[in-house]
Length: 279
Picture 1: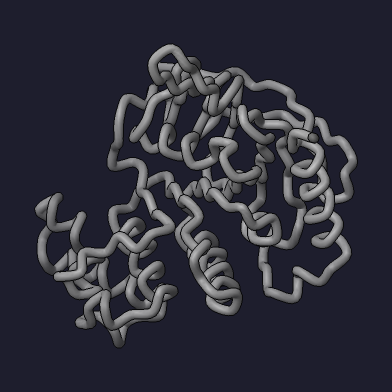
Picture 2: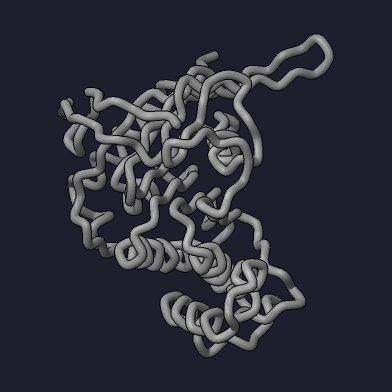
């Protein structure tokens, strides 16, 4: 088992002022992660000395320029890839591969096209050989949560992109993972649908209380969704700042027009710009 002592880290609040805070035992701890790809004699450093510390029930967004290693880091949290150096610990156990404690939602639509919406949500439950009545109870609960009860018998080809992602989120949550890993799940959606999905994701998080790690290029999306944001530099990806988001717990789209929201969005944008290599 791996334990972690309480420690003090520097954070900034939504006004940019430093905060000193004590961190309790971690849900997810990635420590001094390097990821190096080797091709023949050539080595490419994708991630360098990156560390994240995520608490139980955090909604954590990771932002950074394209190619900085955000998705690679998420895949390592999922156990789908492994660091060249450093450790990843979830629930005091070293990550050695995928596990039922983690659910994953991708940007691309990953529903089974031959299964109905309801059966897609039940898929993991059937693998567990759960009682059929219990499967139905769980599927009904999540269909109601994502607002698609009327589409239970529909097939993925009959759904819009936003609806497909709702089902993908419900399928992941139906297995009751402790950690939900999301790799730019709203990146391909139009602006209106994206806003609707952001509201839905906040509602799901408030009701279900999963620990969420959410990768996005969209700074506004990160500020709206998260209570904690990690900002990564351009390749090789390093964590350059951890930001605690001190905005209201209940959030509507009008929050995006407030001075506090705009200031935080601007400060993160400036961090990303300053991290880009200059000509």
